[in-house]
Length: 299
Image (cartoon, rainbow, N blue to C red; front, top):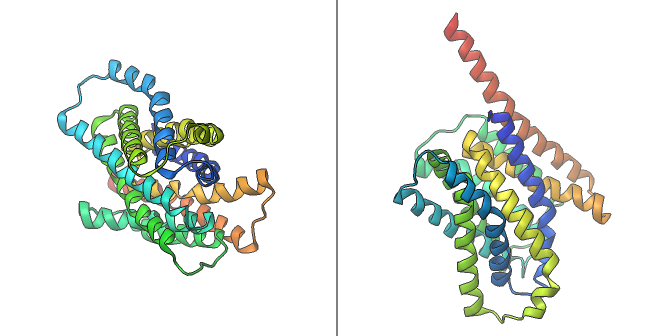
């Protein structure tokens, strides 16, 4: 798979997440955040498991203990991000949560430099800031005073960035994106259930009331979208992946306008333009630079 196709998969993942963002908020009118996290990832595990088993049967080499450990850590980091985001949504608005979650676009290249000591392509820095500015404009171009929920979502963005980086490392190393997805989903399901039993009332009638949101979040936002992320990141960099995944906010706004009759303010359209410009920049500029260097070497 070439980088263009991989980036299109990441763009599709952003679209699926964009449609599911409201479901994450409305589901908690019936059930607690940890139970919601657990149930959505139970469904995600069941949805991906047959494909992961098929991938395992066709694999040319077995996974090492280090690989399995890495998959589990991805699940732990994913759970932490989901938990902070879901709890944060109890006390902040969807607009603020969407904007603050988008901070991972900036956190990814920062963590790549700090932790991995790798220098991303120079276009990543202005593109990340441009995408972040686009998310801010889509949120209305303004923020209320940060409350506890806002701070929790900021912490969520740090874990989101770490998850993107770990997916890039282990997805490339193992070549087993679906197995990796199944493991991280199962870890999230178990940790979410333990947290729900410990801290929340478990009401199965409430679960039935939230069933549509749980099914969408489990099968599509989790099972499909995170698997698309795992597959796509095998063929692109973590920093570029973060830019494409940031289209989640763009699609959330567009689907809200198309399906719910919500209107995008004038600044919101400018935000859409910023995000698309960032996506095009990280897709076109590195490819153009690479081709130019290749021509220079042959002349």
